Length: 243
View 1 (cartoon, one colour):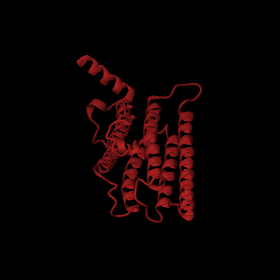
View 2 (view 1 turned 60 degrees about the vertical axis):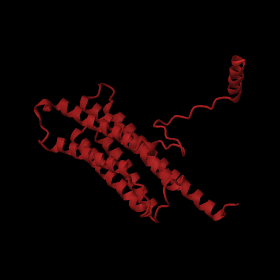
View 3 (view 1 turned 135 degrees about the vertical axis):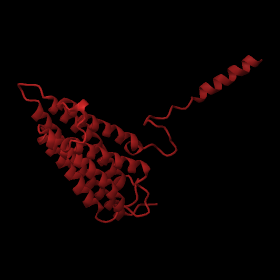
View 4 (view 1 turned 30 degrees about the horizontal axis):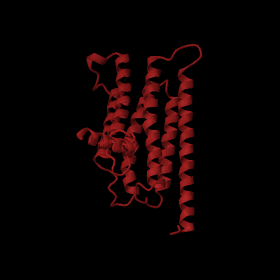
């Protein structure tokens, strides 16, 4: 059976569009990382605790965002893991993903402004949770692509974002054991690290999909089958022993 040339052409064109978007996203994220490093590692001095905490928070956030965005684009438009999206979904995804890349660059520029940095980071967590909800709408209504794990993931994003905003802009969490600025900075970076760990824990199978019929928790290959020569040798050995 031969594939329809027109269908093959459209699939190739769409794959190229996705590839170009992923390349553009990679460039913007790379610029964000480079800019953050340039700003907090001046020639004459070591970075402050606040700057170091912001850098760690930025890196541990970029990793799952970059990984997840590329996996989402591949699963939706290239590998066919998700149902065919509705018309206009690609443009919406392009706008959102590219905008998130620009937000990372803005975070890099503001990395020395702790209050502004973590405020924007918290808003990014909340917006990303709503984008995942929106991706359900870009696909067919009958597609159950938002399961309990994705719901929990979105809730975690929103909760972490709200806690960061409360920590920065309110005195509700101004408990005696972390009134010092150092303790508050450690609390903020810890929230970013914990969010990333929970991110991967909740939707691990999305980040590292397993082949059909494989139920391993870790993305490791199956053990190699036992060679037939070894099986035959053991069988003969058993027969010799019984004699």
